Amino acid sequence: MNIEKHRFRGPWSLWFIGILFLFLYAYGVYDFVMMLGHNVEYYSSNNYGDEVFEYFTDYPVLTLMLWIINIVSGVIAPILLLFRSRWAVMMALISAISILILQFITFAFMNRWNVFGPWVSLFDIAIMLMTFGLFVYCKAMAKRDVLI
Image (cartoon, rainbow, N blue to C red):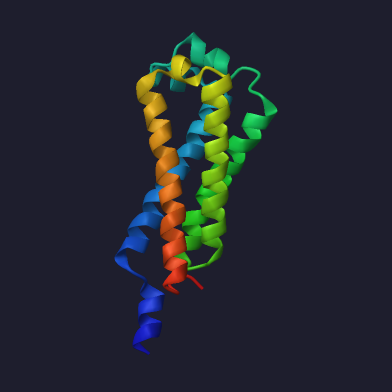
């Protein structure tokens, strides 16, 4: 009975990580819509210039697909984590791999560092590392049988 109660509640870190990543990737959805929708007010509020606007004009299909996969799986993973589903591990892995490939392509071939500058670029790298951390956390929770 005590084990079942623990499994239902889960460790406090599960709630913290799940809610943190849900908010993080929910903002990612908002950012995605604003950036690709070419919302001028959003661009100016973030001090993005013409270079960033041009960067997202005719955005390549491959990078667009990777970004969509990252955002969708990044929203689903913490929801599944909060519901204690083992599928959270797979969704977090898909999100982590897609953001890794996306950032490799955009930094190596699309001049991302120079277009966005060091602070936004480092923030994006931090998001990628955090997403890999989410995968590691989900995997650890599955190994401890917190996720079913």
